[in-house]
Length: 202
Image (cartoon, rainbow, N blue to C red):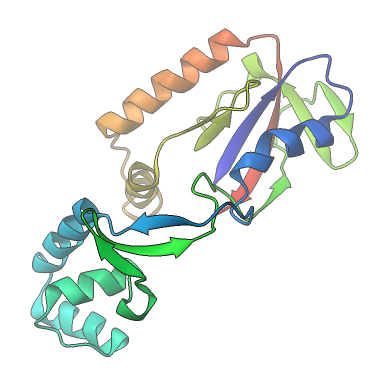
């Protein structure tokens, strides 16, 4: 995913500042053990998605997981990476796993990027910075100077990718339209700040 990191124009050590802003969103930061619950809403959504598939498609997925094709709930759990052997318990909120993974995790590695055709405000080895007001593209995520992470969202982002890159159609969902407005507003809040563009792997 492409992320836009906004920093103050007086920033001296750009690399260090970006690292500091992104640190809270590192997948591999270990936190105190907590209960991660099975998302029932996501489970129902996945079951309905399976119901809309052909018998041949369902059988293919079931074969891949080596489970019965007629148990859509089990199949949906597997598709959500929720396996019985990893469940640590059940309480009034449902099934849960104990985990120390960062619940705010967004990336596991990233690299600094350049945008062809744009002129850098100034250049740090391997790091290009730009004036926020010069950025015209819509990123998947934006990190503001206060350290807050804003994003389009995984589902809407995937839908946008499929429509544009696979189906070749320019159709924007309500989420995309709202996200474009959100990015426009953020940019208008920091017109004289600098922006660093990253390719983040999640």
